[in-house]
Image (cartoon, rainbow, N blue to C red; front, side):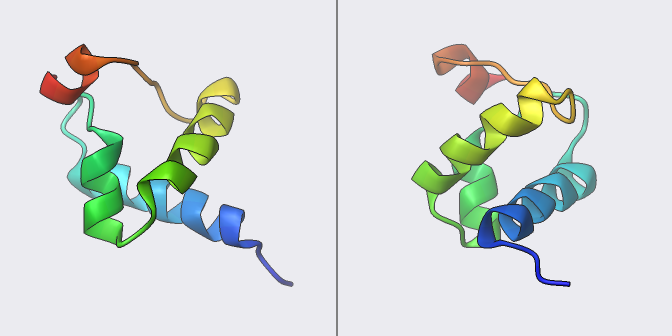
Length: 66
């Protein structure tokens, strides 16, 4: 079975959140840096995860300081 790049990146996001999450919001930039993934690509994957109730999200500057 082959997993697409988008699928692999989604798994990396979820693993990163599980390892580094403490209940507060984590900026996409930090996940991208830790995983060595393109920030813009993650911005396309996270809405899909949010829509399917896999992750919670918050937009804007408040999300970066949370």
